[in-house]
Every structure is written in C-alpha cells, then in structure tokens.
Image (cartoon, rainbow, N blue to C red; front, side, top):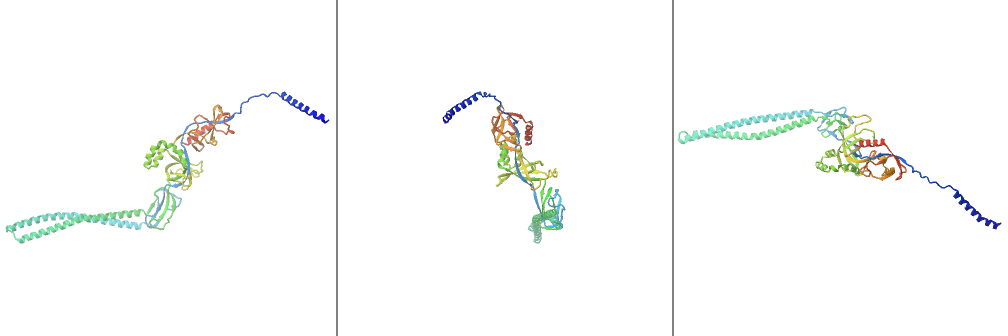
Length: 453
C-alpha cells in the first residue's frame, strides 16, 4: 500500500499542472480600452500690468505739534482764572484765561510816562537855550567887531596926539570885556550839544521804561495764542505768582504729529520709484528742504486708528525723517502731520486725534509698474498657471511687495498669462485642467489696484 501511494503522488501533480494550464487558456483575452485622464476644473484670471502706488505700514503715537507751557512773565496776585481752564477743556484762540493784578504796573507806567515827559521838556528847553545862545554869540561877535574898530580908531588918534591915553585904555577895557563875553558864549554853545546828548539818552531810557511798563501791563492778562486743549493747570484765583511760575499747559489742536516707525528694509519698495529723481533730490537736499522733497516725490500718507479696519482715515503730510534708528526694533521713524483732526468729528465713528492714540500710518510712494495678483493665489512662493495644452504649470516666484490683498511682481510673470485662483490639490505639474474665467475676481483685482492709488 505504501508503494502504491508513492507512485500516485507524481501523477496527482501532473494532473494539477494540466488543469492550471487549461484554466489559463480558457480565460478571455484582456481588452485594452484607453480612456482619457481626469480633467480638473479651475478658476482663472488674466495677469495684467498696472501702475500701482506701493505703500508700507507703520505704527506710531499721536503727539501735539505744539505743547506750550505758559509761565508768568511778571509777579503779582492772580485776580481771575477762566472757569473752563481745566484739563481736557478746549478754548478758542485769544481767550483771556488768567489775569494778574495790574495796579502796581499801572502806577509804574504813569511814573515812566512822567519821566519821559520831563526829559522831553528839558530837551525842548535846552534847544531853546541853544538857539538863544547862538543869537547872543552872533550879537557879541558883532559887538567885538565894533569894539575892535573903535579901539583901532582911538589908537590912531593917540598916535596923532588927538586923543588921550586914558581914552585908549577905556576902549581897550571895553574890547577885552567884549572878547570875554564872546568867549563865554562860545563855551556855552559848545557845551550844549553834549547836554543834548545826555537828555537824548535820558529820553531813550524813559521811552524804554514806558515800553517795558506797557509790556508788563499787557502781561497781566494772558490770552491763548491758538485754538487749544488744556493739558495741565497749576494756578488758582487769589494765588501770588512769581515771574517764571508755570500757570498751565495747552496743546495746539489745529495740527498733530505722529512719529510712525517703519522697518528699514521695507523702504526699498518705495525707494525704487525715486531713482529718476536723483538730481532733483540732491538739489533739494542742498537747500535742506525736506518738505519740498517729499512733495516732489509724491510721497503721501494716510492715518487711521490701529486695529480699527473699518474706521475713518485721515490724510496726512510727510514732514520729515527721524535722524536715528530705533536700536531695539531697527525701525526708522517718519514724522507725519494731520491738520484739523477736530473737524468733521462723528462721535463713536470718527473721533479727533488726541495725544496718546495708537495709530496705523500707511506711507504711499510714487506710481510704479507691477503685475498685481491676489495674495491668496500665492502658494508658498509658487504660482499656478495654465500652461500649453491647458496643463498645470508651476513657477517659483518672489513678490517685490505684498500689500493688503495683493502681491506685486515686477518680473517672473507676464501679461496675458492665466493665473489659477482656486484651490488645487494635489497640484501635479502637467495635469490637465479645465480653466474657467472668474470675472468677479478679475473685477475685484482691478478695484484693489485702484484703491492703492
């Protein structure tokens, strides 16, 4: 039996192999039916070239353009303080806010005026005396001339023996007296100019004293020099103040400044548009006129409250560039100004710009040529394009600038290319696509571009 089993095993193996071959041959032949690969629908827009004003964003705190600390210029008792002179109050220009007792200064002014009148009267008297002295001198000189002639005549008669020596001596005495009179009058006339100079100096001193007392009298009433918001108050009615004592502090509300800080490397985006103005910039900088330079470059700014994306926007003027870099943040300060932020105030939506507000400042450069695309179409430094044969083409790019919803390119892409703006996953280069133009996004892209101007 064992021998029979051993002989049956090879036979069974052969039968199994034969059955397998038969089954394979009986299978129907595979029919290859090629089918088209799956096509992916995508939304696209056309890449266009546009003139765009690039802008960079910075942040800064509102500061007053003028913060005036008003001090007493004279000493005295405070007899009046404006009832609204309180911190935070707003008062118009030329409002009398503080008065100091002026009685002593009124008396001092009267005394100064009296001294001036006295000096002027003395000068007038001197001038009259001078005129009289000149006339007296002229008469004395004529008398001297006659006395000399009489003496000469008498001397001739004495020589002829027709007159006595006594008569000649008498004429000589008269001649000497007349000479003495002429000399005295000459001395008097010569001294009068010096006396007039002294009186002129006294009059100048008296006039200066009068002006000083008038100014002191004016200083007893303190007026606001501009439309102001009171920042601090240090005076009360009845208080005695000395010259130099601080009375109050006020801010000029007609203009505020913001020292906005910008990353230094971001300025390159705006600076690219300034190359063609190099000669102009040099000539302006030689005149040290930064305001004119910014105007010529078309550099402007807008201001809004930080974090308030739907709030009001204020137009600002670029005033100057800070002279130092922030050592910690490595940012550069640009000082911009806003005029009359208290106008058109709307409670709850458009407040005035007051000291300490944290603001967002957008600095806008000159127009430059760019290819603007939606930032959402940028996939980790890749753009998806519809290539030849409606197949996916991916290109590595680096935008020159990203601003709001846009990424701006000056090279790397070209006008007319179809940019894929819908999600695409997986994104396999060469995969077939069915592009569909997104007219709404194309229009939105144009609107975003126009809003940047």
